[in-house]
Structures are given as C-alpha cells and as structure tokens.
Length: 189
Image 1 (cartoon, rainbow, N blue to C red):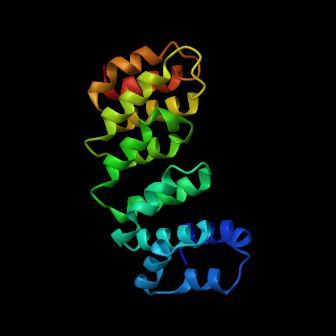
Image 2 (spheres, rainbow, N blue to C red):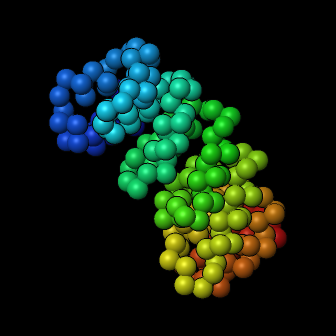
Image 3 (cartoon, one colour):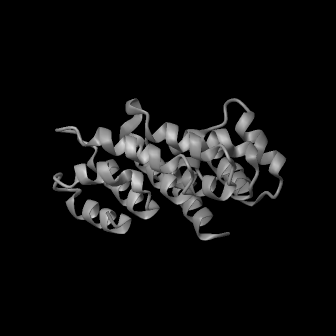
C-alpha cells in the first residue's frame, strides 16, 4: 500500500466503521468490483471515495466523474486525495474540469485544490484559469486570499507571461506581495 492510499485508508477508517466492506475495498484487485461501487445506489461516500481513488491511481477512467466531484468537496482532505488520483489518472478531460471548478464563483471557497491541480497539470487551460481566478480575488474585501495566493504561486511556477499584468496588480495586496514579486521575477518582467 503506497503512502497516499495509506493516508486515505487511515482517514476513512473511522468514517467507515472499519468493517469487512472497508477492508475489501482497500485490497481488491478487481477493477470491475471497484467500478460497481461508483454506480451502485446507496453506497456511502467513504466507499465511493476509496473506489474512485484506487481506480484513478490505476489509470481506470471510470473513476473520472467521481474524482471530479470529490475535487470540489467541502472536505479539503477529500479534495487533495481526488487531485492526487486525477493527476495519476492522466485523463485529457482533467484540465478542463479543474479549470471549470476553479473559476466557478459559486464554489470559490472550495477552489484551492483545483487551482493547485491546474498548476501541477501545466495544461493549456491552466494559466488562463489561474489568471481569471486571481483577477476576481483582487477585489477589495475578498475573503479568499488563500485561493489568490495559490493562483500567484501557480502562475509563477507556470511562467506564463500572460500573467504579468494580474501579478503586478496583486502586489499591493499585503498577503500576496512577496509571492507576487517572486512570481514576476520568475517571468523576468
């Protein structure tokens, strides 16, 4: 069992009650059995999360929709596990889905992990989505400074020159100043 699966298993042990169904999902090598968990009604969230995570990490695209839903969950740990599995899944739909989640203003409180995933994906959708999200976060009184900071750091890591204007605009924001200056330096603007 790798470290990510071990962490997920530990986190979900109490939620699941740690019974035989929980143990079975952690050890089965049958991808069809795991995929069935995603489509059967009345399955608890913990079971769906284990199945989607294991399928995603194994490259089975049947996990894609479930992982995208988990990527936008209110529980940050579920989001992080989903992002890890989505990265390993390498489905070509992932960048577009992550960009849609990151730029959804109705779900901005849950955008941190999709923003970080976009940075790691380094897809054509990544920089435009991060620029759009950061621009919205620069409005006075916006409470989502962690999302803004992740955008700044991501744009610096991506090195896309299209980000220069929004990074300059973010410098006056005290929580973003240092990261924005560093990102701009990486762009050599």
